[in-house]
Image 1: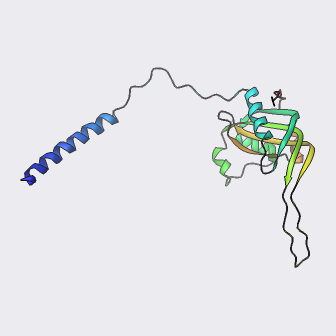
Image 2 (image 1 turned 60 degrees about the vertical axis):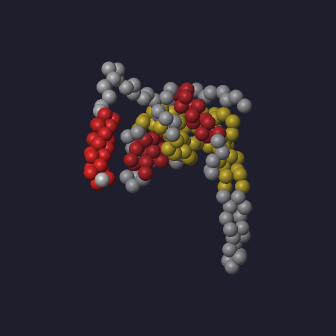
Length: 180
């Protein structure tokens, strides 16, 4: 008896699921207004993003106080990398996938606390263990580049000495006063 009932029930279930699937897959009508584009953040907000990131303690160190110089502008990630490092972006680098991404390149000059890692000595060769320490470095140039829309930091670090003249050509940015 159940054998006659089962095929009928399976057909009803199949058609119910088919109708449900087709109604869920129907396209929603297109909106008459276009979706807004995501514009880069303003220079003031870029300064805030950069200073927040640079004042945060990282594995390498952090900026002390306000920078004495603050420069920057928007450009492609590949251009920012080449300007800071003096060489083009390596095609094998993970950053190469985003080479055309619009970023803010912000360059600071100021006082930094740098974390110098220690190292273990080798008793067989009589080399001593070197303890890690923090060193304050005055007038250090540092660059940070981050997504011009979202603020995601791609890279930050020191500037190659030969590239400092390039950095001085970037437009000056006004530093914001930080509240303690």
